[in-house]
Length: 363
Image (cartoon, rainbow, N blue to C red):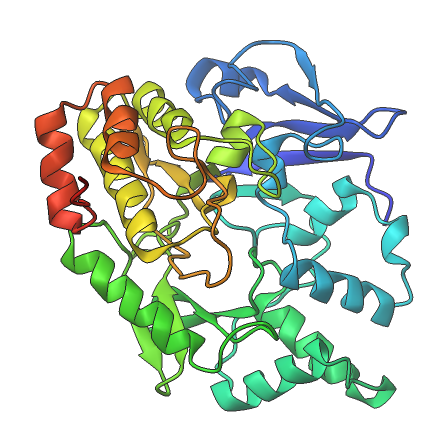
């Protein structure tokens, strides 16, 4: 597993090529035909220009944000490392280029990497309770040498997933879904709680994906980076677009709303982001980091992705993304100030705040 060059593709077309510098920094160059007919896959960091781009060391350990989005993190990374170990490969010997090759055609969004290592196969319908038990063994480190099939199975059905909580991919009525499972720090009813919050978000006007509660306890959402016909939709996170480390509180919602305005050039999309900010304040979703906001490109322009990972975070009072420079004790004035900075009138902002029911009556 020593890839020297990877080809990046989108819908079968070559976007460009990736390689590592001697300093283990990612280098990327757009394909000549893509420069003529394609779009910038990272508007501010990889403009559509004929040159070799070299990534900085931080914040993505020598990678570009748009390709970092393709890599699994937390649970997915754990499974990848376990699978590598199962195959006799030391995880720390595997470069970021090799890890993208492992993702191959199975990552989020629409970017694909060739040659692929093909360590993930097709989805398989397995009993959800049995999967939860397998996940528990991994989390509690109760697996043994004879349990290799557990790691292999979990990797196969969810090894390229992002986010912290365990999850799997599944086909439901021909559509692609993600089903989440409880992590060790989660309450036992986390699935029901997330389902209820998503229903609440729908009622107050947020754009949310189709969602269900499976077996009364496992929360699932339909993938918005896949069309009904299976076509992949290009997706990029705010973290990638702004070179913002999602593990650090480096952004304000003013940054996110400004980004939405620049990218989409549509105030309707900006108001969607403002509504999402208000809702996160309402439910105390302090896990509102830069990777939990994404944008989609469908050939007709950029759009804010539906809201996802909407959860309460009890005991954590500081928002990962600040509101008017504040992580806690958010007031009407703070929310209105953010709105004003991006051209949303007080009247319209107040209407959205009332619809979300986040308006606070202050003395």
